[in-house]
Image (tube, rainbow, N blue to C red; front, side):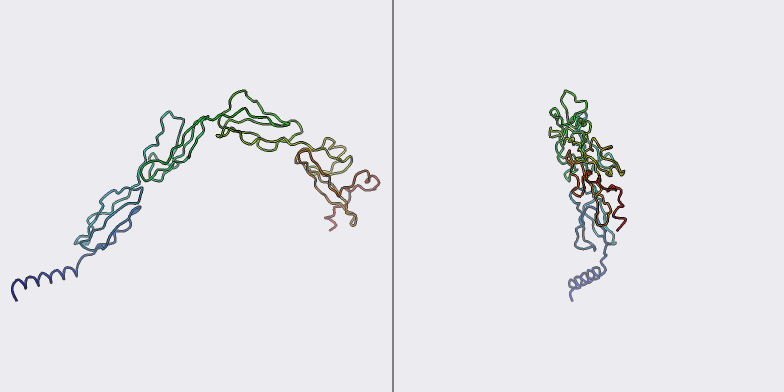
Length: 290
């Protein structure tokens, strides 16, 4: 065998022996908010690093598995993108505050905007720090003026001022005596330039019965003595009706609904009851008999 062939054989043998004992590096682990790209963890291969959108690589972008089975570089870190303060002037009517503690806003952080009164906010009140280091759309503040508020039937407005009303200003309503306020006490100037829902004054009810014993506010009372002026809206009177078969009484409710009052059909006019020895209200309750 020629010397040249002998040398080539020895080199090939050495290469095979070395390859059989090639060092393998340990699993590098996970890169938080990023990815590791690789084909093999053994010498002399490389691994590459990249970060998810919204994060910046801090450290080396590659690492090589060395002969000693160690990586040439430690894992880098993926740091979140930082957003600068939003474009709000120092003396602007548009204010903001961070929704989590700290003085720095990073990717996916949120801030909440508000306007100084009487300005109203138009647009999204929440802005998000985006992957490109910019804030999502910033809202604007506009002046809003509502027309003079209108009154309500059978009611009035407290301290109505003869001036323009602005966003979030309120007026308070009340009702005339015997009428009941139904709905919100206040109406507010909204950003639409209109007032929020006004209340309604509901009318009282006269009781279309001359004589009767009824249950009112959990007490037995005479209509002709205690309820001559009727009842207010939403109040309930319980009438006593007679079960002729069992000779007992049962209660049926009647409710005042904005001036309308209907006496239960089972109730007998008191003029007929005058001929009875016992008032229906004094009969034993039917539930105690059953």
